[in-house]
Image (cartoon, rainbow, N blue to C red):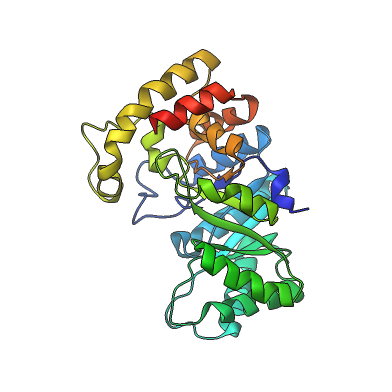
Length: 295
């Protein structure tokens, strides 16, 4: 059985150490992230997702440091970024060893190809993932941001090595539901759908005002979807109040009910606690239908 199916939710660490996009070091820092790590553990979350690209290695180093301080070894996911100057299978193995050093472990539980970009053919990276698994550097392998056709390509290569394809990590939230129709088929194939940006970069928390969107990427990316935000937020708040949780928890629980594995970010203890509330509630079929209608 795919070990990812035993996890209802994880924590994404894109914002850990990222100064360019998330502003690490301005309104949050290492101490805040340490508390987010601690609160997530206390809530029972045991999966952590990072990448060499996040904070250009700082995210992995912080996660490794927090694990050593706490004396815990959760399920670890990290990713290989196919920079255009990386042209061979050896580049993936070299990058993976760098990630292992920053995390302070001998192997990761899941290693993903971050993007299926050229110029290197996808089959070459799939062969490298199989080799990483065979060398014992990654206990499992998968991809991120891959289409269904690309998944088939990778799976075909891995099948020849008898290495299972464990995951495809994609953007999936109540505002971005394109992958939802594929969830049953992926599950039948033993492939977990890991959902990044499950709170739509904060839009589904209720903390951002759709009438006054923030400047920068978050405002620009979601501007075409603000009508959906306006429809969803009242319902998220209504359901959250009825269940005594945050709107974030409702949005995350929807994905869990659909069979996805959300990996929301957490920059401080409060965000970690609010996210983890999704683990102690359920949504009825009627509530799920209402959320589908609003989105």
